[in-house]
Amino acid sequence: MATLLAAFLERLRVKNYAASTIEDHDINLRHFIAWCAERAITRASDVTKPMIDRYQRVLYYYRKADGRPLSFQSQHLKLSSVKLFFRWLTRENHILYNPASEIELPRVERRLPRYVLTANEADRVLSQPDITTPFGIRDRAMLEILYSTGIRRAELVHLTIYDLDAERGTIMVRQGKGKKDRMVPIGERAIAWTLKYLAEVRPTLISSRDDDGTMFLTYTGIGFSPDLLTRWVRQYVEAAGLQKAGACHLFRHTMATLMLERGANIRFVQEMLGHAHLQTTQIYTRVAIKKLKEIHSLTHPSAKLERSIAVADGEDADDAPRLDEHDDSEK
Image (tube, rainbow, N blue to C red; front, top):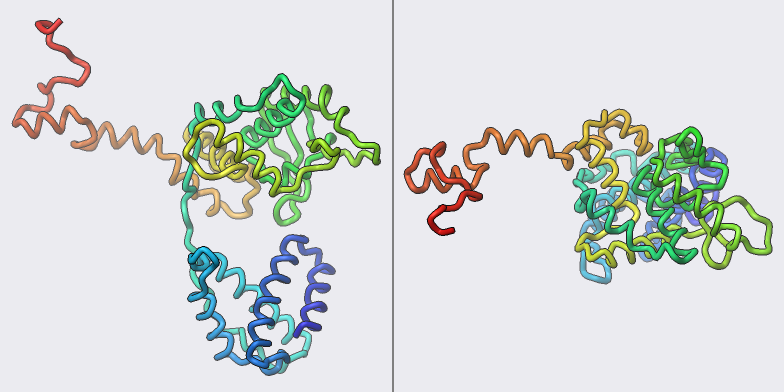
């Protein structure tokens, strides 16, 4: 199976799958092949449906080093790789039948974003970089772009100096998730900080090597890695004193939620986020409950504290004193 795995991955490259997707399939299938090898199964033709069912149970009961189980999302991805691999093996006549054809993948939970920043909290994070230093200007520009556009961290690190159109107020995201290009609007404040960085800071960071046009550079003159960017942004979130987990994606959640709360059409938010399906964007409508909260406060009998106090005391709710009223005799 190890030899066939190499051919399978090569086929994915020929079909122009994203490098990250190919890497994920490689990791998932190596784990499955190693599990089979421990049971003296090395040929794909020897794999049976009961074996794959057993492997699915192994994933369910598996515990990581910290004692936590694999999420159903992780189990789904690992089994999807196995299913895709054996479908290819069958199509290419490496095996006579597909033992993974009847795998029932675990249902993926659709979880709401755990943390979302308010507008004031986002501004607190953005004010953390020391803008009297070159690196502070660079970091402020990166945070502004994350907040203004909601692009993914990988999309930010791959931005080039040619992707910003300050005159039109747009930024081009090239080869985003699914290898799709899209153009998104960017706010004036983010443009101003980015232009300041490009004019004053980036020329001092360019190394002696050929400049490939990467927009944001480290002190060594090379671009950020996604993991380094996450650690960088996380430091600023913690410095702002916020007890909310997250980093780059936290700004993505915040941008989408705040725009929806302020009346943005969900189709436009979908386009900005680069979601292929509207159902993915609809998650944010469940977080953006400002309008629902207003209706609840106006219509639910127990929504107002003074109403609840009045009912408890047997008074008419309309005659109940409000919390901001004071007895003049006490003044």
